[in-house]
Amino acid sequence: MIEPKDFVSKKIQEMPFSGIRKFFDVANEMDNVISLGVGEPDFITPWAIRERAIYTLEKSSIRYTSNLGLKELRVEIASYLKRKYELSYCPNNEILVTVGASEGIDVALRTLLNPGEEVLVVEPSYVSYKPCVEMAGGVPVVINTKVENDFRLQPEEILEKLTDRTKAIILPYPNNPTGAIMEREDLEKIAKVIKEHNIFVISDEIYSELTYGERQHVSIASLEGMRDLCVVLNGFSKAFSMTGWRLGYAAGPKDIISNMTKVHQYVIMCAPTISQYAALEAFRSCDKEVAKMRQEYDMRRNVMRKGFEDMGLSCFEALGAFYLFPSIRSTGLSSDEFSERLLFEERVAVVPGTAFGECGEGFIRCSYAYSIKDIKRALARIEKFLQKIR
Image: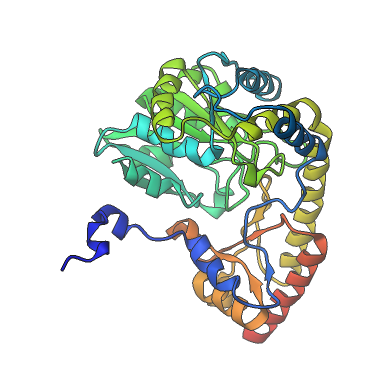
């Protein structure tokens, strides 16, 4: 007799579960665990955003919006992208409101790819890129970035992986898990290669508000000749502490956004209506709250990095997002062994670097989107663990 699992496609059966979620399913069942693992802000969503959602729920009929999203919100997104990142998009047909940036990744890939076409996936990177490429019928081709380059993508690394089947590249900066960024001069170098070889860019910029020091995020789409070769993905989860609101957006050439909307309308209809109204308030009145959160993250970043360096773990200076990616090679343990033993022996949850690609071996991802109290407690436990295994 046929079993239920036999109805599942081979592609999905062979696809692994997320290396993050699988690991934290174990951690969630344990007591007294300090987690540095989940990429979720610990700040409460700003009150003005929550108040707008409450008002909308009380006073409005909550109905479907346009497939593209509320026109009013798309106008605000266009204004935000212009003033922040020098990007110009028409709210009528070049912006699509999505269910988080994650849906944007999926829809962009399904829109772009024909069966067998290749997508360059820059690693270490967010765990969903390769599975989404495969589910869209494409072939992921990994580019391994290097710590000696601060995990910044190099033009020669793109050239090494190009074939006549290369269709697109996913650009994941500021980067999860490393915290790496790409500055203007870095982007200009790779933009030259991209234009010469007609590669389309899916630029995941969900952490664009979280860069530190004097550096400001630069979108590759703002460079000369790149606008029509890019779709820019962003959202509200990280900058505005709105993870559970599930709201993002894609901006790009109208022919790309129009066809992305076809996919979106059949599988989603529209992004959550209450979240869209709340997001209007995020853009209109929450710049100061975002700045305060960024300042707090910066302080936590410095505390955590100094803690790792003081205990002898090398850690390059991450300049974006809210993660550090310290090397644990000096311990002689693999990333999985280190993370598992740290969890069971000292009750600290981190993510093995291999969850983000093979080149993550020898590293762990630690989020500083947690209170300074928890960060210091976790660092003390990690130091105790290191003293035991050295």
